[in-house]
Image 1 (tube, rainbow, N blue to C red):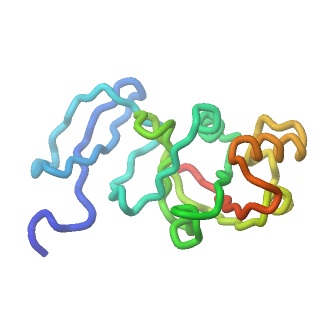
Image 2 (tube, helix red, strand yellow):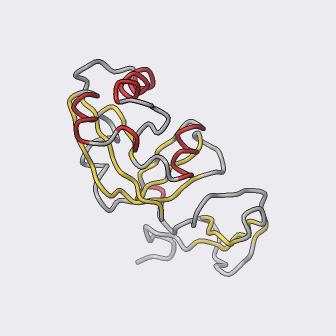
Length: 166
């Protein structure tokens, strides 16, 4: 294989003083794989040497991100389509849950389970609402919150996936 053409790139070690551990940052152009680089960024959990094309990227609002971070939220629920189909969301696939699209905070995990549903009622018959919307006090409350966030009708196809943090 020609030099530099492998799908996975070795990552440079980067110190993150705010969290007091080392994490890996991709450096596509670097040939020096043992260089320690100081940057002003943080991450939650270990960074994995996963090619961005090999992971499922899931941008989250601040509250859902914090629920995942605290362990209260275990399931993510999305409209069925585009990257949220069984072809892309499958058991064992690496997931990057990121606060926003470009923020420095991310949680790395793996898909543990995938559930397809025809609407919120169907989904919450299969998955405990507290593991999806931990602030909901009742199932009906969870349906209303999820409906407002996703802007879905009663029979809109959905895909939910359970994420275990790595």
